[in-house]
Image (tube, rainbow, N blue to C red; front, side):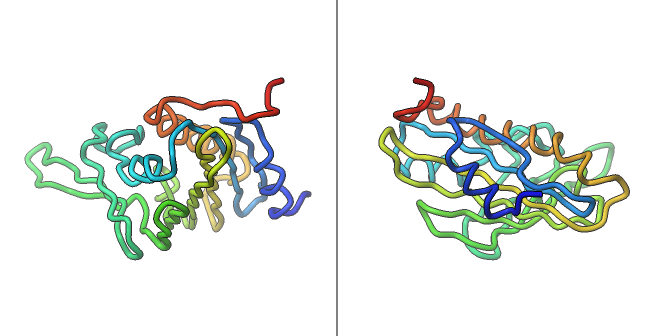
Length: 183
């Protein structure tokens, strides 16, 4: 089994908008996605910290209920409207654990149905200048105990993580190919 560091380095050389499961075991898995957009890091950062404009999976089926406080300890949360005679609710999707504006956003939390399990997840999004704009690297690592084999769930989570990155990339005008890719 390749170690995680090697897998992540290899993932950085991938073609735009590529995705793969880079590590999987009975206790967890890691995914890596990457894309290049023709936008500067400032524009990418501004879009990244406003998931209400592009994030697609919500408990309320309405991304406008999302908010992200981009500071350590900040919440990536969702307001749940009152329903069926009950008051408003809320969901913490993830907790912000690292912010380096224009460079790195790291959040901790298990997303969607993973929340109901004994799993810990970490999403790290890094931005870097490249010749044609900004490369967005999207890494999600999860581990712990679940009532299902985590490795079997990895491709589903990878697909959803790819969907998130694709939505952000689309919000920024779509992916562009880097020099030397696709030639």
